[in-house]
Amino acid sequence: MPDFIMLMHKDAIVKIDPETWAPYLASLSKKGIFDGGSAIGRGEVFRKQETPGEASEHLGGYLRVQAKSLDDARELLAGNPIFESGGTVEIRELPRD
Image 1 (tube, rainbow, N blue to C red):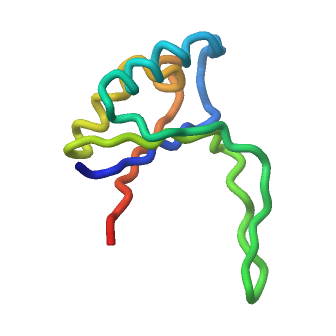
Image 2 (cartoon, rainbow, N blue to C red):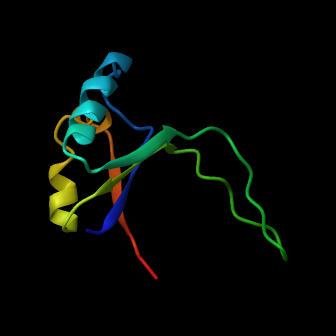
């Protein structure tokens, strides 16, 4: 089954209650499709030559999940605190070599 990463943007319209994360993550774990995640802290951008672009300050965290397709991964947004609060969640497939 393919792996997907959900990138949570820091643009929620409504303030998120931190207590809403535990039940959402527990539901993903119960389905056996949750493969970790974390908040994303500050960082820096590096490039070997020339000046790098700016660090993305709009990303606040990520989740890694397994789903049969992008459509199935999208269905996992139900209950996601960022999504439910009007925020943006970007879903990307993680290709396997």
